[in-house]
Length: 249
Image 1: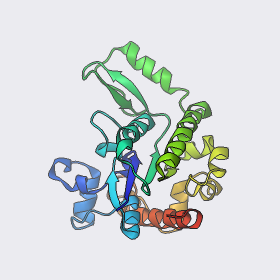
Image 2: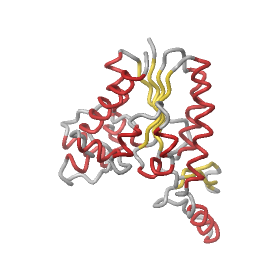
Image 3: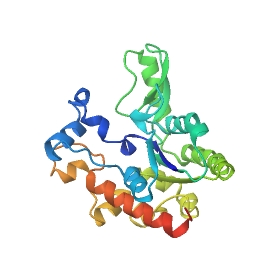
């Protein structure tokens, strides 16, 4: 049986792990237990895997390799580390996160951590904090996003060699703005034209089809901005419709 592999950030993570007691203080634990009666919803990739009768392996975010994180470099690293397992007829999903995220050396743990605008590495010198902030200043520019396109060239060629399908998407508006021309001319980018036509926003496209964030589903009782049960179902339906229209599985 073929397998669907999912790479990305927290928007691609499976819900099941967040139902565990050790995640009790998280918004997703609250969503599962207080709004869904303890039933973990399925993510878009699991829904697609079930409909196609594929196995499913999530390697996104918390499910990735040890010491990897939630930046795009981590997403690619998780793919490279998993690539020996990927076989003929498998499907791979890449869900880009914000290009503003990047890796930085953490002197305390002596590993590279993913740095987010609202989550800089702690307990470092003022000079190092300033360096991170300076490095972050231009990360929203198109040139940084163009670096991902170069990696896509290799990944698509690798997919041809091993005869598996690879698809790209993002929940980040900035990715669509920076890579507009690349995306609209590439059928491996799912819903690209539709998203760009909706003001570069996948969220608007989902809302127009009845898919909402956890915050929206719970009428702001839960503050989590990640996709809720409805959004993952809509995303799965839209993705699968486009895949079946343009590709032979």
